[in-house]
Length: 356
Ligand SMILES: *Cc1c(COP(=O)(O)O)cnc(C)c1O
Image (tube, rainbow, N blue to C red; front, side, top):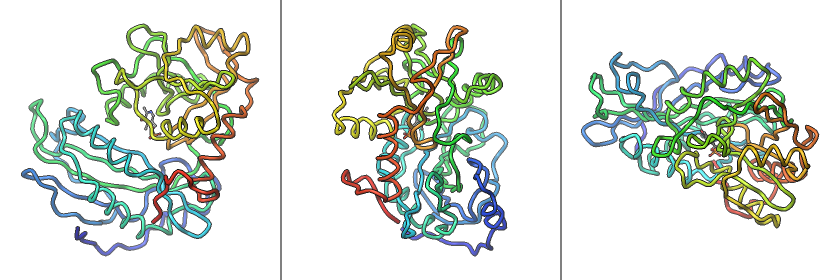
């Protein structure tokens, strides 16, 4: 694929962000972005342009009806200056699953990955050096046709933007407090829960804001039907440790976003000798587990926050404390191995890394 390149002046933000101690998540963007259009059934004109505003019809289907999808990945800078991608082929696969659900065209792995690698190579200097910091990657597809009919767009724009980021939670790798949502749900069977599509996140903003106001970092979602089984926490999958068993919600309801961190955690935990149960776990069982101490650890897992230990669940007006608000042994082990592989500090025996 031949990618056209515009001449781009260096961005002043680069110098500004370097002076900051803690990089705020998603605040800065690199100089360049990748774009390609879909018209008359074909992907056309791949190009790298200056990062900047898009020209869109006010009637664009993405804006009116939310025909949008995205991915979330990171490039981790190694000591040697390489940029490590973590299982990027799984992001392409999931992106195309999201596309299918939203009646959008699929993109080829070549377009997605070749353009990403080229963009990363050009923007290499933007990647922060600190462990825990990275270059966050946001591939996006939007329906660009201007028309007020509720049918899929004929035209699309696929683009990739990059954002140098620090830790997702300002507190870093420390236990967070979680608000269990009792009145609002994220996804229902038959809905769009398994797709990374804007509307899922729009629907989460109100309760997320309420939780933050009360001092909780994220919302834990319960299932839509019984309102008792745990599904996800914010934009992370959730795990519970009972002795040598690791529990997480199963994917078959279609209400859970199939995280590639989730899949990787399951693989590592198996190799650490844990038994894995992908089973529905009810809030009643979890509360009982915090009372009798059988629930030893809880953590969220996702690309943005990597592994986030959970120290407290607020449910039915009460705070339930997990592991004395300390990081658990299993949580720490998983975190160390994951971060170690991603930043190239330990051997990638799984073959998960693609270096640029
Ligand atoms: C992206 C996301 C995840 C985590 O997926 P990863 O591939 O591990 O980053 C989990 N839940 C939701 C709702 C998400 O949007």
